[in-house]
Image (cartoon, rainbow, N blue to C red; front, side, top):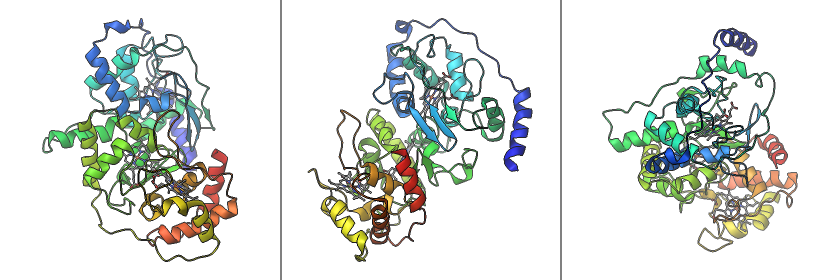
Length: 408
Ligand code: HEC
Ligand code: HEC
Ligand code: HEC
Protein backbone atom coordinates (compact mmCIF):
# COMPACT_ATOMS: atom_id res chain seq x y z
CA UNK A 1 0.00 0.00 0.00
CA UNK A 2 2.62 2.47 1.11
CA UNK A 3 4.56 1.78 -2.05
CA UNK A 4 1.55 2.57 -4.26
CA UNK A 5 0.79 5.81 -2.54
CA UNK A 6 4.40 6.78 -3.01
CA UNK A 7 4.16 5.96 -6.70
CA UNK A 8 1.01 8.02 -6.94
CA UNK A 9 2.68 10.96 -5.23
CA UNK A 10 5.62 10.37 -7.55
CA UNK A 11 3.54 10.76 -10.67
CA UNK A 12 2.06 13.96 -9.32
CA UNK A 13 5.44 15.45 -8.49
CA UNK A 14 7.13 14.19 -11.63
CA UNK A 15 4.37 15.64 -13.78
CA UNK A 16 4.92 19.17 -12.57
CA UNK A 17 8.69 18.99 -12.14
CA UNK A 18 10.13 18.67 -15.63
CA UNK A 19 13.73 19.84 -15.49
CA UNK A 20 15.40 22.11 -17.95
CA UNK A 21 17.85 20.77 -20.53
CA UNK A 22 21.16 22.62 -20.68
CA UNK A 23 22.41 23.49 -24.17
CA UNK A 24 25.14 21.26 -25.63
CA UNK A 25 28.54 22.92 -25.42
CA UNK A 26 31.47 22.60 -27.80
CA UNK A 27 33.88 20.20 -26.08
CA UNK A 28 36.52 22.47 -24.50
CA UNK A 29 39.99 21.71 -25.93
CA UNK A 30 41.96 19.58 -23.46
CA UNK A 31 45.04 21.87 -23.43
CA UNK A 32 42.86 24.81 -22.33
CA UNK A 33 42.65 23.36 -18.80
CA UNK A 34 45.20 24.46 -16.22
CA UNK A 35 47.51 21.45 -15.56
CA UNK A 36 47.53 22.18 -11.82
CA UNK A 37 43.73 22.02 -11.79
CA UNK A 38 43.83 18.74 -13.73
CA UNK A 39 46.28 17.26 -11.20
CA UNK A 40 44.05 18.33 -8.34
CA UNK A 41 41.08 16.80 -10.16
CA UNK A 42 42.95 13.50 -10.48
CA UNK A 43 43.31 13.29 -6.69
CA UNK A 44 39.72 14.27 -6.13
CA UNK A 45 38.57 11.63 -8.63
CA UNK A 46 40.53 9.01 -6.67
CA UNK A 47 38.99 10.19 -3.38
CA UNK A 48 35.55 10.01 -5.04
CA UNK A 49 36.09 6.57 -6.62
CA UNK A 50 34.87 7.85 -10.00
CA UNK A 51 36.97 5.16 -11.72
CA UNK A 52 35.41 2.31 -9.74
CA UNK A 53 31.93 2.69 -11.19
CA UNK A 54 32.77 4.29 -14.52
CA UNK A 55 35.40 1.78 -15.70
CA UNK A 56 34.48 -1.78 -16.71
CA UNK A 57 36.88 -4.55 -15.61
CA UNK A 58 39.65 -4.52 -18.21
CA UNK A 59 37.95 -1.60 -20.01
CA UNK A 60 39.16 1.86 -20.99
CA UNK A 61 39.25 4.32 -18.07
CA UNK A 62 35.94 6.14 -17.51
CA UNK A 63 34.31 4.64 -20.62
CA UNK A 64 31.55 3.05 -18.53
CA UNK A 65 29.98 -0.39 -18.61
CA UNK A 66 30.79 -1.51 -15.09
CA UNK A 67 27.80 -3.42 -13.63
CA UNK A 68 26.54 -2.30 -10.24
CA UNK A 69 24.17 -4.70 -8.50
CA UNK A 70 21.50 -3.11 -6.33
CA UNK A 71 18.35 -4.48 -4.67
CA UNK A 72 16.39 -2.91 -7.57
CA UNK A 73 18.35 -4.44 -10.42
CA UNK A 74 21.64 -3.81 -12.19
CA UNK A 75 22.84 -0.37 -13.24
CA UNK A 76 25.80 0.30 -15.51
CA UNK A 77 28.30 3.10 -15.00
CA UNK A 78 28.01 5.55 -17.88
CA UNK A 79 30.73 6.80 -20.22
CA UNK A 80 32.10 10.00 -18.69
CA UNK A 81 35.00 10.44 -21.09
CA UNK A 82 34.81 13.59 -23.25
CA UNK A 83 33.55 11.68 -26.31
CA UNK A 84 30.90 14.01 -27.78
CA UNK A 85 28.52 11.26 -28.91
CA UNK A 86 28.63 8.58 -26.22
CA UNK A 87 30.34 10.40 -23.33
CA UNK A 88 29.99 13.85 -21.80
CA UNK A 89 32.00 15.76 -24.43
CA UNK A 90 29.11 18.16 -24.99
CA UNK A 91 28.61 18.92 -21.30
CA UNK A 92 29.44 22.43 -20.14
CA UNK A 93 30.96 22.93 -16.70
CA UNK A 94 27.50 24.05 -15.56
CA UNK A 95 25.90 20.79 -16.75
CA UNK A 96 28.60 18.76 -14.99
CA UNK A 97 28.14 20.74 -11.78
CA UNK A 98 24.38 20.25 -11.94
CA UNK A 99 24.82 16.47 -12.31
CA UNK A 100 26.92 16.29 -9.13
CA UNK A 101 24.87 18.80 -7.16
CA UNK A 102 21.35 17.93 -8.26
CA UNK A 103 21.50 14.48 -9.84
CA UNK A 104 20.32 15.63 -13.29
CA UNK A 105 21.86 14.81 -16.65
CA UNK A 106 22.46 17.44 -19.34
CA UNK A 107 19.01 16.90 -20.83
CA UNK A 108 17.43 17.45 -17.42
CA UNK A 109 16.56 13.81 -16.66
CA UNK A 110 16.82 12.60 -13.08
CA UNK A 111 19.79 10.36 -12.34
CA UNK A 112 19.67 7.25 -10.18
CA UNK A 113 21.20 7.68 -6.73
CA UNK A 114 23.46 4.66 -7.37
CA UNK A 115 25.52 7.60 -8.66
CA UNK A 116 26.25 8.97 -5.16
CA UNK A 117 25.19 12.56 -5.81
CA UNK A 118 23.56 12.56 -2.37
CA UNK A 119 27.20 12.96 -1.27
CA UNK A 120 28.68 14.86 -4.20
CA UNK A 121 26.02 17.55 -3.74
CA UNK A 122 28.13 18.76 -0.79
CA UNK A 123 31.25 19.32 -2.94
CA UNK A 124 32.67 22.84 -3.21
CA UNK A 125 32.45 24.68 -6.55
CA UNK A 126 36.23 24.65 -6.70
CA UNK A 127 36.46 20.88 -6.34
CA UNK A 128 33.78 20.39 -8.98
CA UNK A 129 35.78 22.60 -11.35
CA UNK A 130 38.88 20.47 -10.76
CA UNK A 131 36.94 17.24 -11.34
CA UNK A 132 35.56 18.68 -14.58
CA UNK A 133 39.06 19.64 -15.73
CA UNK A 134 40.27 16.11 -14.98
CA UNK A 135 37.40 14.28 -16.64
CA UNK A 136 37.44 16.49 -19.75
CA UNK A 137 41.16 15.86 -20.30
CA UNK A 138 40.82 12.05 -20.32
CA UNK A 139 41.08 10.11 -23.57
CA UNK A 140 37.70 10.33 -25.33
CA UNK A 141 36.33 6.82 -25.84
CA UNK A 142 33.42 5.95 -28.09
CA UNK A 143 31.49 3.39 -26.08
CA UNK A 144 27.93 2.97 -24.89
CA UNK A 145 27.25 0.97 -21.74
CA UNK A 146 24.43 -1.58 -21.72
CA UNK A 147 21.06 -0.13 -20.65
CA UNK A 148 20.24 -0.47 -16.94
CA UNK A 149 18.32 -3.62 -16.02
CA UNK A 150 15.93 -2.42 -13.33
CA UNK A 151 12.64 -3.98 -12.27
CA UNK A 152 9.36 -2.11 -12.57
CA UNK A 153 8.64 0.45 -11.16
CA UNK A 154 12.30 1.35 -10.58
CA UNK A 155 12.94 1.45 -14.33
CA UNK A 156 10.62 4.48 -14.65
CA UNK A 157 13.17 7.25 -14.47
CA UNK A 158 10.62 10.03 -13.98
CA UNK A 159 9.64 8.53 -10.61
CA UNK A 160 13.03 9.61 -9.33
CA UNK A 161 11.55 13.10 -9.18
CA UNK A 162 9.35 11.95 -6.31
CA UNK A 163 12.16 9.97 -4.70
CA UNK A 164 14.31 13.08 -4.69
CA UNK A 165 11.50 15.23 -3.32
CA UNK A 166 11.16 12.76 -0.44
CA UNK A 167 14.77 11.97 0.32
CA UNK A 168 17.32 14.09 -1.49
CA UNK A 169 18.66 17.18 0.29
CA UNK A 170 20.98 19.12 -2.00
CA UNK A 171 23.42 21.58 -0.43
CA UNK A 172 27.11 22.37 -0.16
CA UNK A 173 29.09 21.21 2.91
CA UNK A 174 29.31 23.84 5.64
CA UNK A 175 32.49 23.66 7.73
CA UNK A 176 32.00 23.92 11.48
CA UNK A 177 33.97 26.96 12.69
CA UNK A 178 34.42 25.36 16.13
CA UNK A 179 36.38 22.48 14.62
CA UNK A 180 39.97 22.51 13.36
CA UNK A 181 40.71 22.71 9.63
CA UNK A 182 41.87 19.07 9.84
CA UNK A 183 38.60 17.93 11.44
CA UNK A 184 36.58 19.85 8.88
CA UNK A 185 38.61 18.31 6.08
CA UNK A 186 37.87 14.81 7.42
CA UNK A 187 34.16 15.59 7.70
CA UNK A 188 34.07 17.13 4.22
CA UNK A 189 35.72 14.10 2.64
CA UNK A 190 33.72 11.51 4.60
CA UNK A 191 30.38 13.23 4.05
CA UNK A 192 30.87 14.33 0.45
CA UNK A 193 33.55 13.19 -1.96
CA UNK A 194 34.58 9.87 -0.37
CA UNK A 195 30.88 8.98 0.23
CA UNK A 196 31.76 6.45 2.95
CA UNK A 197 28.12 6.40 4.10
CA UNK A 198 26.88 5.39 0.65
CA UNK A 199 27.90 1.87 1.67
CA UNK A 200 28.25 2.08 5.46
CA UNK A 201 24.86 3.68 6.25
CA UNK A 202 21.72 1.48 6.03
CA UNK A 203 19.01 2.25 3.46
CA UNK A 204 15.24 1.88 3.56
CA UNK A 205 13.10 -0.22 1.19
CA UNK A 206 13.27 2.53 -1.45
CA UNK A 207 17.04 2.78 -1.30
CA UNK A 208 17.12 6.02 0.67
CA UNK A 209 19.64 6.43 3.44
CA UNK A 210 18.38 6.26 6.99
CA UNK A 211 20.13 9.44 8.08
CA UNK A 212 19.32 8.90 11.74
CA UNK A 213 21.39 5.70 11.48
CA UNK A 214 24.50 7.29 9.97
CA UNK A 215 27.36 4.74 9.69
CA UNK A 216 25.33 2.01 11.45
CA UNK A 217 26.38 -0.50 8.78
CA UNK A 218 24.94 -0.85 5.29
CA UNK A 219 25.11 -2.93 2.18
CA UNK A 220 27.18 -2.82 -1.00
CA UNK A 221 26.89 -5.23 -3.91
CA UNK A 222 25.89 -8.18 -1.75
CA UNK A 223 28.43 -7.39 0.99
CA UNK A 224 27.79 -5.96 4.42
CA UNK A 225 29.68 -2.71 5.03
CA UNK A 226 30.27 -2.76 8.81
CA UNK A 227 29.22 -0.06 11.24
CA UNK A 228 31.78 2.74 11.53
CA UNK A 229 30.51 4.14 14.82
CA UNK A 230 30.17 2.82 18.37
CA UNK A 231 28.59 -0.35 16.89
CA UNK A 232 31.77 -1.19 14.93
CA UNK A 233 32.26 -4.96 15.13
CA UNK A 234 36.05 -5.16 14.81
CA UNK A 235 37.37 -7.55 17.49
CA UNK A 236 40.31 -5.19 18.12
CA UNK A 237 39.09 -1.58 18.44
CA UNK A 238 40.51 0.71 15.77
CA UNK A 239 43.04 3.37 16.67
CA UNK A 240 43.44 6.38 14.37
CA UNK A 241 46.85 5.09 13.29
CA UNK A 242 45.49 1.63 12.45
CA UNK A 243 42.63 3.16 10.49
CA UNK A 244 45.11 5.26 8.56
CA UNK A 245 47.20 2.19 7.70
CA UNK A 246 44.10 0.23 6.70
CA UNK A 247 42.67 2.99 4.52
CA UNK A 248 46.04 3.57 2.89
CA UNK A 249 47.11 -0.05 2.31
CA UNK A 250 44.05 -2.27 2.92
CA UNK A 251 45.96 -4.11 5.60
CA UNK A 252 46.61 -3.39 9.23
CA UNK A 253 48.33 -5.92 11.51
CA UNK A 254 45.34 -6.56 13.79
CA UNK A 255 42.42 -6.29 11.37
CA UNK A 256 40.99 -8.10 8.38
CA UNK A 257 42.10 -7.15 4.89
CA UNK A 258 39.87 -4.72 2.94
CA UNK A 259 37.99 -7.16 0.73
CA UNK A 260 35.05 -6.97 -1.67
CA UNK A 261 33.81 -3.43 -2.48
CA UNK A 262 36.23 -1.95 0.10
CA UNK A 263 39.23 -3.08 -1.94
CA UNK A 264 38.89 -0.48 -4.73
CA UNK A 265 38.31 2.22 -2.09
CA UNK A 266 41.68 1.59 -0.42
CA UNK A 267 43.44 1.20 -3.78
CA UNK A 268 42.28 4.72 -4.61
CA UNK A 269 43.21 6.08 -1.18
CA UNK A 270 46.75 4.78 -1.74
CA UNK A 271 47.10 7.41 -4.47
CA UNK A 272 45.96 10.58 -2.70
CA UNK A 273 47.61 13.04 -0.33
CA UNK A 274 48.55 11.36 2.95
CA UNK A 275 47.02 14.26 4.87
CA UNK A 276 43.58 13.52 3.41
CA UNK A 277 43.73 9.88 4.48
CA UNK A 278 44.79 11.02 7.97
CA UNK A 279 41.82 13.37 8.09
CA UNK A 280 39.47 10.51 7.17
CA UNK A 281 41.08 8.16 9.71
CA UNK A 282 40.79 10.75 12.49
CA UNK A 283 37.17 11.47 11.60
CA UNK A 284 36.18 7.81 11.94
CA UNK A 285 38.44 7.06 14.92
CA UNK A 286 36.44 9.69 16.82
CA UNK A 287 33.18 7.93 15.88
CA UNK A 288 34.44 4.51 17.04
CA UNK A 289 35.37 4.65 20.70
CA UNK A 290 37.30 1.46 21.46
CA UNK A 291 35.97 -1.20 23.78
CA UNK A 292 39.41 -2.64 24.44
CA UNK A 293 39.22 -6.40 24.61
CA UNK A 294 41.61 -8.93 23.13
CA UNK A 295 40.03 -11.37 20.72
CA UNK A 296 40.12 -14.99 21.71
CA UNK A 297 38.99 -18.16 20.02
CA UNK A 298 36.42 -20.14 22.05
CA UNK A 299 36.99 -23.82 22.78
CA UNK A 300 36.93 -26.06 19.73
CA UNK A 301 33.44 -27.60 19.66
CA UNK A 302 34.45 -30.40 17.29
CA UNK A 303 31.93 -31.80 14.80
CA UNK A 304 32.09 -31.85 11.00
CA UNK A 305 32.79 -28.08 10.83
CA UNK A 306 36.00 -28.51 12.83
CA UNK A 307 37.45 -30.94 10.31
CA UNK A 308 36.45 -28.74 7.36
CA UNK A 309 38.02 -25.72 9.05
CA UNK A 310 41.23 -27.60 9.83
CA UNK A 311 41.57 -28.91 6.29
CA UNK A 312 40.48 -25.84 4.32
CA UNK A 313 41.27 -22.79 6.47
CA UNK A 314 43.39 -23.52 9.51
CA UNK A 315 46.53 -24.33 7.56
CA UNK A 316 46.87 -20.61 6.78
CA UNK A 317 44.75 -18.81 9.36
CA UNK A 318 46.18 -20.63 12.38
CA UNK A 319 49.68 -19.52 11.38
CA UNK A 320 49.08 -15.82 11.83
CA UNK A 321 49.78 -13.23 9.16
CA UNK A 322 53.36 -12.47 8.19
CA UNK A 323 54.94 -11.54 4.87
CA UNK A 324 55.09 -15.15 3.65
CA UNK A 325 52.47 -16.73 1.45
CA UNK A 326 50.26 -19.29 3.19
CA UNK A 327 50.11 -17.15 6.32
CA UNK A 328 46.94 -15.31 7.33
CA UNK A 329 45.27 -13.52 10.24
CA UNK A 330 43.72 -15.74 12.95
CA UNK A 331 39.99 -15.58 12.30
CA UNK A 332 39.19 -14.36 15.83
CA UNK A 333 40.60 -11.00 14.64
CA UNK A 334 38.39 -10.78 11.55
CA UNK A 335 35.27 -8.57 11.57
CA UNK A 336 33.53 -10.92 9.16
CA UNK A 337 33.09 -13.42 12.01
CA UNK A 338 31.55 -10.82 14.34
CA UNK A 339 29.05 -9.22 11.91
CA UNK A 340 25.27 -9.51 12.27
CA UNK A 341 25.23 -11.33 8.91
CA UNK A 342 27.16 -14.26 7.45
CA UNK A 343 27.34 -12.74 3.96
CA UNK A 344 30.92 -11.44 4.06
CA UNK A 345 32.40 -14.65 5.42
CA UNK A 346 30.42 -16.61 2.82
CA UNK A 347 31.66 -14.44 -0.02
CA UNK A 348 35.27 -14.56 1.16
CA UNK A 349 35.02 -18.35 1.55
CA UNK A 350 33.52 -18.92 -1.90
CA UNK A 351 35.37 -16.26 -3.92
CA UNK A 352 38.64 -16.09 -2.02
CA UNK A 353 40.68 -12.90 -2.10
CA UNK A 354 42.75 -11.72 -5.03
CA UNK A 355 44.13 -8.37 -6.12
CA UNK A 356 42.91 -6.96 -9.47
CA UNK A 357 44.86 -8.35 -12.45
CA UNK A 358 48.42 -7.06 -12.51
CA UNK A 359 48.29 -5.38 -9.08
CA UNK A 360 50.09 -6.53 -5.94
CA UNK A 361 48.16 -7.95 -3.02
CA UNK A 362 47.55 -10.95 -0.80
CA UNK A 363 45.93 -14.07 -2.17
CA UNK A 364 43.49 -16.59 -0.74
CA UNK A 365 41.97 -19.37 -2.88
CA UNK A 366 38.17 -19.51 -3.30
CA UNK A 367 36.31 -22.61 -2.16
CA UNK A 368 33.21 -22.34 -4.38
CA UNK A 369 34.08 -25.61 -6.14
CA UNK A 370 35.88 -27.41 -3.33
CA UNK A 371 33.11 -27.21 -0.71
CA UNK A 372 29.50 -28.40 -1.03
CA UNK A 373 26.65 -26.29 0.37
CA UNK A 374 26.36 -28.68 3.32
CA UNK A 375 30.07 -28.30 4.07
CA UNK A 376 29.91 -24.52 3.80
CA UNK A 377 27.00 -24.45 6.27
CA UNK A 378 28.87 -26.63 8.75
CA UNK A 379 31.92 -24.40 8.36
CA UNK A 380 29.85 -21.26 9.00
CA UNK A 381 28.28 -22.73 12.13
CA UNK A 382 31.64 -23.81 13.48
CA UNK A 383 33.54 -20.62 12.60
CA UNK A 384 30.89 -18.38 14.12
CA UNK A 385 30.82 -20.26 17.41
CA UNK A 386 34.60 -20.59 17.64
CA UNK A 387 35.72 -17.15 16.38
CA UNK A 388 32.63 -14.93 16.62
CA UNK A 389 33.49 -13.54 20.05
CA UNK A 390 30.38 -15.06 21.66
CA UNK A 391 27.92 -13.62 19.11
CA UNK A 392 24.73 -15.67 18.54
CA UNK A 393 24.61 -18.18 15.64
CA UNK A 394 23.74 -16.73 12.23
CA UNK A 395 20.22 -17.39 10.96
CA UNK A 396 20.77 -16.10 7.42
CA UNK A 397 23.29 -18.66 6.14
CA UNK A 398 20.89 -20.58 3.84
CA UNK A 399 19.63 -17.47 2.11
CA UNK A 400 23.00 -15.71 1.87
CA UNK A 401 24.69 -18.84 0.58
CA UNK A 402 22.08 -19.10 -2.19
CA UNK A 403 22.67 -15.44 -3.16
CA UNK A 404 26.44 -15.76 -3.05
CA UNK A 405 26.30 -18.86 -5.28
CA UNK A 406 24.04 -17.03 -7.76
CA UNK A 407 26.42 -14.06 -7.95
CA UNK A 408 29.43 -16.22 -8.75
C1 HEC B 1 28.99 4.04 -6.86
C2 HEC B 1 29.13 4.19 -8.28
C3 HEC B 1 29.50 5.53 -8.85
C4 HEC B 1 30.51 6.38 -8.45
C5 HEC B 1 31.46 6.20 -7.30
C6 HEC B 1 30.47 7.49 -9.36
N1 HEC B 1 29.47 7.34 -10.28
FE1 HEC B 1 28.99 8.64 -11.75
N2 HEC B 1 27.37 7.49 -12.20
C7 HEC B 1 27.13 6.22 -11.72
C8 HEC B 1 25.96 5.67 -12.38
C9 HEC B 1 25.38 4.29 -12.14
C10 HEC B 1 25.50 6.67 -13.27
C11 HEC B 1 24.28 6.59 -14.17
C12 HEC B 1 23.07 7.05 -13.40
C13 HEC B 1 21.82 7.04 -14.22
O1 HEC B 1 21.78 6.46 -15.31
O2 HEC B 1 20.83 7.62 -13.76
C14 HEC B 1 26.42 7.79 -13.13
C15 HEC B 1 26.29 8.98 -13.82
C16 HEC B 1 27.23 9.99 -13.81
C17 HEC B 1 27.15 11.19 -14.61
C18 HEC B 1 26.04 11.52 -15.58
C19 HEC B 1 26.48 10.95 -16.90
C20 HEC B 1 25.44 10.76 -17.93
O3 HEC B 1 25.82 10.25 -18.99
O4 HEC B 1 24.27 11.05 -17.72
C21 HEC B 1 28.28 11.93 -14.35
C22 HEC B 1 28.66 13.27 -14.97
C23 HEC B 1 29.04 11.20 -13.37
N3 HEC B 1 28.38 10.03 -13.06
C24 HEC B 1 30.25 11.62 -12.89
C25 HEC B 1 30.90 11.01 -11.83
C26 HEC B 1 32.06 11.56 -11.16
C27 HEC B 1 32.78 12.83 -11.56
C28 HEC B 1 32.36 10.70 -10.14
C29 HEC B 1 33.43 10.83 -9.07
C30 HEC B 1 33.44 12.08 -8.33
C31 HEC B 1 31.39 9.62 -10.19
N4 HEC B 1 30.53 9.84 -11.22
C32 HEC B 1 31.35 8.55 -9.30
C33 HEC B 1 27.83 5.59 -10.73
C34 HEC B 1 28.86 6.15 -10.00
C1 HEC C 1 31.56 0.76 -2.25
C2 HEC C 1 31.19 0.58 -0.88
C3 HEC C 1 32.10 1.15 0.17
C4 HEC C 1 32.59 2.42 0.28
C5 HEC C 1 32.37 3.60 -0.66
C6 HEC C 1 33.35 2.46 1.49
N1 HEC C 1 33.35 1.23 2.10
FE1 HEC C 1 34.35 0.71 3.78
N2 HEC C 1 33.76 -1.20 3.56
C7 HEC C 1 32.90 -1.67 2.60
C8 HEC C 1 32.72 -3.10 2.78
C9 HEC C 1 31.83 -4.00 1.93
C10 HEC C 1 33.51 -3.48 3.87
C11 HEC C 1 33.72 -4.90 4.43
C12 HEC C 1 34.95 -5.43 3.76
C13 HEC C 1 35.42 -6.76 4.23
O1 HEC C 1 34.67 -7.55 4.81
O2 HEC C 1 36.60 -7.03 3.98
C14 HEC C 1 34.15 -2.26 4.34
C15 HEC C 1 35.03 -2.21 5.43
C16 HEC C 1 35.51 -1.04 5.98
C17 HEC C 1 36.27 -0.98 7.20
C18 HEC C 1 36.64 -2.14 8.10
C19 HEC C 1 35.61 -2.22 9.19
C20 HEC C 1 35.88 -3.29 10.19
O3 HEC C 1 35.80 -2.97 11.39
O4 HEC C 1 36.17 -4.42 9.80
C21 HEC C 1 36.55 0.35 7.42
C22 HEC C 1 37.34 0.93 8.58
C23 HEC C 1 35.98 1.09 6.33
N3 HEC C 1 35.35 0.21 5.47
C24 HEC C 1 36.07 2.46 6.20
C25 HEC C 1 35.59 3.16 5.09
C26 HEC C 1 35.81 4.57 4.89
C27 HEC C 1 36.52 5.50 5.85
C28 HEC C 1 35.23 4.88 3.69
C29 HEC C 1 35.24 6.21 2.97
C30 HEC C 1 36.57 6.72 2.70
C31 HEC C 1 34.66 3.67 3.16
N4 HEC C 1 34.89 2.65 4.04
C32 HEC C 1 34.01 3.59 1.95
C33 HEC C 1 32.31 -0.93 1.60
C34 HEC C 1 32.59 0.41 1.32
C1 HEC D 1 46.34 -20.55 1.33
C2 HEC D 1 46.10 -19.82 2.54
C3 HEC D 1 44.64 -19.57 2.94
C4 HEC D 1 43.63 -20.48 3.10
C5 HEC D 1 43.68 -21.98 2.90
C6 HEC D 1 42.47 -19.72 3.55
N1 HEC D 1 42.78 -18.40 3.64
FE1 HEC D 1 41.54 -16.94 4.24
N2 HEC D 1 42.96 -15.57 3.79
C7 HEC D 1 44.23 -15.85 3.34
C8 HEC D 1 44.93 -14.61 3.07
C9 HEC D 1 46.35 -14.48 2.56
C10 HEC D 1 44.03 -13.57 3.36
C11 HEC D 1 44.30 -12.08 3.20
C12 HEC D 1 44.51 -11.36 4.49
C13 HEC D 1 45.52 -11.97 5.41
O1 HEC D 1 46.68 -12.10 5.03
O2 HEC D 1 45.14 -12.30 6.55
C14 HEC D 1 42.81 -14.21 3.84
C15 HEC D 1 41.72 -13.53 4.32
C16 HEC D 1 40.61 -14.11 4.92
C17 HEC D 1 39.59 -13.40 5.65
C18 HEC D 1 39.56 -11.91 5.95
C19 HEC D 1 40.33 -11.72 7.24
C20 HEC D 1 41.81 -11.58 7.01
O3 HEC D 1 42.56 -12.57 7.24
O4 HEC D 1 42.24 -10.51 6.57
C21 HEC D 1 38.69 -14.34 6.09
C22 HEC D 1 37.46 -14.07 6.93
C23 HEC D 1 39.14 -15.62 5.61
N3 HEC D 1 40.31 -15.44 4.91
C24 HEC D 1 38.49 -16.81 5.84
C25 HEC D 1 38.94 -18.04 5.36
C26 HEC D 1 38.19 -19.26 5.46
C27 HEC D 1 36.82 -19.39 6.11
C28 HEC D 1 38.95 -20.25 4.91
C29 HEC D 1 38.60 -21.68 4.71
C30 HEC D 1 37.42 -21.95 3.91
C31 HEC D 1 40.19 -19.62 4.46
N4 HEC D 1 40.14 -18.29 4.74
C32 HEC D 1 41.23 -20.29 3.84
C33 HEC D 1 44.79 -17.08 3.18
C34 HEC D 1 44.09 -18.27 3.26
